Length: 169
Image (spheres, rainbow, N blue to C red):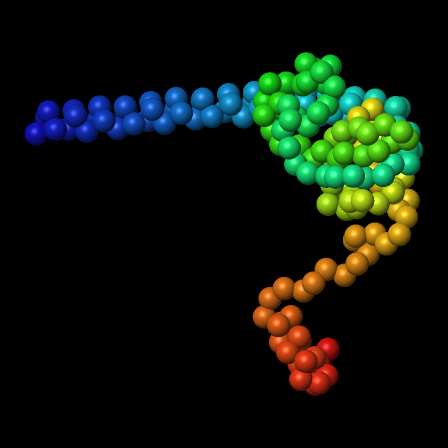
């Protein structure tokens, strides 16, 4: 009976020790991630300021756009050498455009990649090889055109329209 009681006390104290060690490791990880996040925020703010300083508006004809690896994108060798190894394998939004007489591969901002029209002439804000914004568009914008509705309600509206009934709105 006494050995069972001693074993129970030992098991409880071992569980508490393991719990305290796990909590200490988690606390240390949170503190390290906090400081790394602050450092990354500072670096991103510096990069944004640098991009703002070098931006210029350029008229270009968008030939093609797709997501592809940095290695396969046809970017200059200097860009590939400066990119971190993980970035070389990641798929980035790449736009192939004719700027003046030259055909170039440019990296597009993730936010505007879907709104960049293909086979259209645009005025884009470019910072180095990075497209940050698409301004003036010649012709209709892809985002101005109404996207087709999906789902059951759209199907019902389509069938009512075919039957000649007015949809209730």
